[in-house]
Length: 291
Image (cartoon, rainbow, N blue to C red):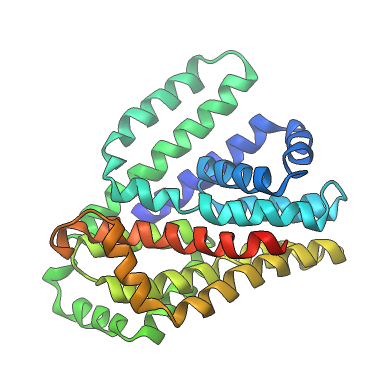
């Protein structure tokens, strides 16, 4: 039920923001994508707000298909979207989910008493944001009880295998259509002492590969350039994950170095969130000159 609430909040918030932006989104996209660095920044901010890189890339594909964006313009937003999607896990790791009821209350009040259409649309974004974090709170309570069940703990032991961890991360992300959800759940699992940092790094790589599916599915019946946009997203995520596989030990050391110090059990949620962000920032820095 917690995961369902999380997904409902994400969908509600994403749709609310798209309604609020309306036709202005096309003008905004055209302006910000003329410079690749601005495009990356916009993609990151926009995705951080709607909490879904999948929604961002699906919008990109639709705009490219309609001839409103070129392939080159869309790639910068794709890179930024991959950075913006890491914000969800960062917020979860910082334990900011306790304010969820207050966010929902503010959103509900604006829905009931807001007279202007733009106010009601913004209220949907706020309400969805609160529902998203309320879902995380619900999952936290459920996951904390898993160690009481030896059978379930036995299944979690298989995640110590890198291949299985990567595959599970990929499959779970394809199922929920969001790497934000996958990594957020991973943070909660780690907080409940169910997985370690090593397994989590492979899980994150699988999640990044799985996050390509919304764009690919959106482009199936689109024109050639829209298909190329989806392929560009897939190349970015898959190539980054494959290369990173060879540097997992060094990535783990770097993540521990920049994260808060202390026993791994106490700081692992911050390490996972930082690993997700570092991976996507590094991939963007490598690919950005090659747009």
